[in-house]
Image (cartoon, rainbow, N blue to C red; front, top):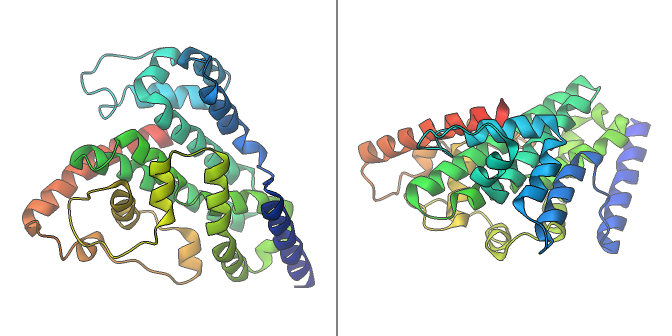
Length: 286
């Protein structure tokens, strides 16, 4: 346990130092997302320039084409076969969400520890599911831009994802996952906010993350913040850190019990949303 204590202390001191200096050391798996952001921020660049980067990453390229051909993104069924057309079809926010999904999946694959791999895989599945729910809820209710909602949904647990990716440098941390989860619980919010600022998130997304999660009071949602709250409750994939810390969440039906919408109509709407979410989930996971 001595190794655990010393490595946890070293990890905490390193994160604190990087936060104070404003220089978070991003894991290598986020390099692709950073490159896409850099090109997107360049006023002289185009979607074709971004497509060049995507084509160089076979997994991301394949997922982009698959997403572009999903009914959610392509309701008229016009086939998309090339990366350039796929990037244009799905848009920048969806592409950035997809890049983070690929990065999160890579984190899970890179862990040699069975325990850490399970946690990483669970966090990846949770983040992707929240992103999909966010997209289809926003699309069906028009509470927010669907692509922005999907990207924001993928960012909900970015602080946890970052800390988990960096934990690979401290192998002794798997000796006590409950204490590691407490460490992540302490650091993930400030780290997440710092990452969102570094990545230059739009104010609409930053505002959604600045607010504490209040109780969900109604359906349909009326804002991006409200959409993310519902998506986090709706997800069928639990956050593994919440599970380690013994944190539960109400069912979506219970959370929306105070909604003015009739229960039968609400269930019908949720079923329609879930249908679109499942298709989008397949395109992100496939």
